Amino acid sequence: MAELHNPHDTLFRALLSDPGRARDFLRDHLPNTIAGQLADTPPEIVEGSFVDEALAGSQSDLLMKVALTSGTDAFVYVLAEHKSTPDPALPLQLASYMVRIWKRYAGTGTARLRALPPIIPVVVYHGAEPWTVPDSLRDMIATDDPDLAFLPGAGYILRNLRAMEIDALSRNAALRAGFITLRQEALAFLAEIAGSLPEGTDLRRQVLEYVLRVYNVDMDALRATLRTGGHNELEALVGTIAETLLEQGKAEGLKAGEAKGKAEGKVEGKAEGKVEGKVEGKAETLGRQLERRFGPLPRDIETRIAAAAPDRIEAWLDAVLDAPDLEAVFAQDRPY
Image (cartoon, rainbow, N blue to C red; front, side, top):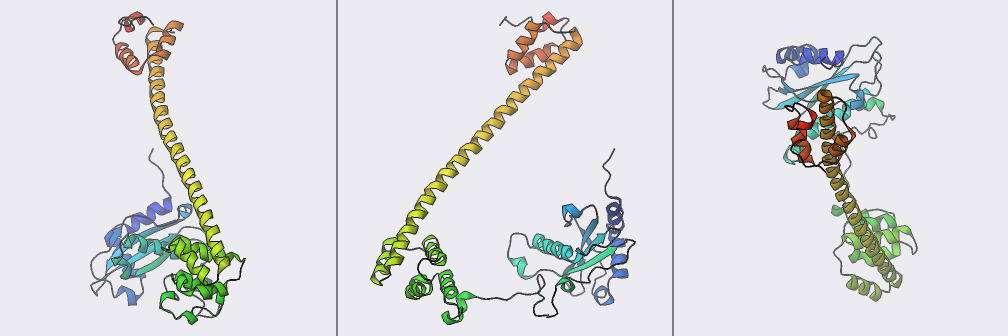
């Protein structure tokens, strides 16, 4: 029997997978301001689904690519909510699905990221209970201040540390020191960093560790610079961090070697297991065929089969088809 799919999903897709019906649906249900921008060509149905696996039983979706009168393209994403009661999380789910569509459209390149097509979201609901879901994701955000209600894809605040003046990085001295380090300018501002990060603090060590991990720095030259500047504590700390990183590197290398050995062992074990499994399976098949043709097997025959090599079992499997009796199957073999 063929697999029975979700009946709601089956009907939903059957209705809208036809380009003609899909075009009529868009003309009937899109606002005039949007429908008037659609070209006369039928929409192109895009294969795939973007619904969360856990929600596949209660939601269906269909993505259409439509041509606009402007000469560009857009997507219409139709999400059908099949629950009898509306799900208040739907706007959040819809937002994540739209992001997935854009990600798939962009692929691994960068050119498309600067020209993402519009996505027109349409929700279809046929449940018995009244629709009480917020009209948009913005309505789900607990603030009356529009400046705080950021939406995915609607914009973001850019703070380009590289383009800012040092004094503008932060009024907090420790933050400013950290930002300077991220700009990879810590070596030019050692005095400020040393004065901004008190001795014995975790951040002081973390900043220096970042420098040693990320910067292309000559260790001896760095320690000499610190010593010349009177930063003896920093010089000692650099040496301690360097030793720790070296030991960690050795430990990670050892772990990587052990992991590689285990992985190789698993592969070899799986391969051996497959071979042994095939041999055992063929031996069992041979035993069943012999019993069906000639009755219960003597103990010595069972022992011979269990100890036989794969090629010998293959020969016996061929022989059992035409042999007149049990002895004839093994007639050409020397006794073990």
